[in-house]
Length: 564
Ligand code: SF4
Image (cartoon, rainbow, N blue to C red; front, side, top):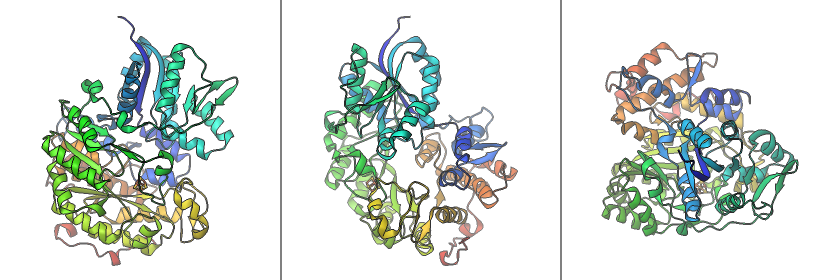
């Protein structure tokens, strides 16, 4: 067979094996913010950590499984917008490419490409990584199967690292940890990628390419930097390039950066100038996707898909007029909800929205510069509920100004607001975020998961999250690692009902609660395993709400006993 000439193979997300990851994070200490965050996302079974997806795949994907022989659940079933965007960008400029959307699921395919084709470079997408481990695993794999290919790593992980670490740490990361050949240091990076591949192909030196580090002499040469200003509307994704590989769901991006300035968030700072596609440009991509035979759902990944409001209404009306066959999911700023918007959302196929609520306390929302109040959130959630759209609320605990009283306000909000699902994140202090400039005001010390401020420190905040997790049974806490709220809809695509999926998650949370309440415990109780096996049968009692919930009584949050 003829070897294919591939200028660049793109490697999508690597969901690192949980057992391996748990061991690495355990090395940081079981008291560390990283471990405590991870700890809410897995249970122990047979002396091995299992995420919710792992448990589903263990019990429900064999021929004799109680819920039927289900297709395994994987993050790879959603097509990556980063791979689609970068590969389209490269292809338009005359280069050849191939890709794997999910490293873990498609290792066999990647090995074949590396061993059987003539591959010039491999570009590793780093959009969702918070540590170097997933990248290191991919680099090792590539080197094992092809020693010649030039490995390029870029994206937010590298850009942030360069901005926040000193030269020695950077050299250590590049040389001793990741060990790639070329690093792209840019909020965007596609221009640098194309110029690098062009130079590699033509055998030209890399010295004149802006925004890259590359191996030279005994280390890495840092080339001069510049701000890339690629125009989103000039680089629409050509989804037809991926038609035969797009499955049930796909991530779609319609903006770059964000027009807001939440005090905890560094995204607008590192993503650069805010830009957004016009409604008709979005439709150009959606109409292509509408022709993909297997596609059931589009996830709009923009932080602010419903901004600007005028564009939002236009695109919703166009989606309705085009009679798109797929459903969709997005983030949503709920303070901008009104009756008409919610009706248009529902009619155009919206199933669920992710709400970055962050806090149920007006005082904390003000400190966060969220530009929203609790009353506005409640009104928005109620409109969404009336309109038949499910809601997933995301909260941050520990932001400057947080006290046990403001945590109580958030707990009350979670219980009473009517959101369907929720999760609380431990605040991670980024020096790129606006709050860092106010550190004297709050007596804020240290970054990452090492912070303390006038009213709380990271250890207290982490313990409070455990307490809330143990206390609140409804709405449902949604695990994150390997799962995420959209996995609920991926499971329903397999023919499960919402109640069956909820039973499954409820049982998983019950298993997590056991180890949170008793840290010396390893494996989950056998009863939890039995409940898993029956959780896909609705109404069997296994995963049903507690008696209090069945009787319609709700918890009085003022009387909740936290381990405060
Ligand atoms: S958290 Fe705020 S600033 Fe950050 S992306 Fe979302 S809306 Fe924008």
